[in-house]
Image (cartoon, rainbow, N blue to C red):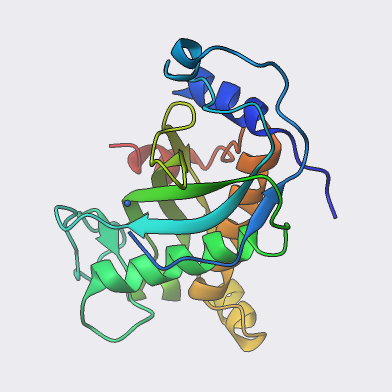
Length: 222
């Protein structure tokens, strides 16, 4: 099991780089948080509420209804949400479940010691591939969200919210067909990728850095 950085390091990372679903099984950050700090200091942005170890007691994922959905079968459709691996329906809820599954996988099995914290995730973009792009060129899975740690008892924020760009390469054509033959659908790849992203965010104060994905990656920032 990889050794995790302290909650203090996470808070520092959030401050430098600067939502609801079902609870998940608990996850721990076992190292103690150094420093005592005063009550006034604890209330300041980027500071911790208590000098002790934390664990993630629950995850809450929110996909705002204000996000627009595109069903256009183009190489690069507009909209905030593009998702085709579930039947037509409530795309916001479908995306919420996919993101929640990835985050849950990322925090699962990390223990349950220390003060309980809640991890809030608010999705701002979720672009998987259209049918046309999946059959031919591939592209980018553009998945972006803001994460916020909160004290589970009081709801008070632990550090600043942090925007996370979790974009990664999306397969197309024969590469996509070979992956699907092995069970690696878009949903499976996205779930596994999000698990790794959140593990990195919790372990490394510098957080996750998406690869340079060229023009399509740049378009996903517009």
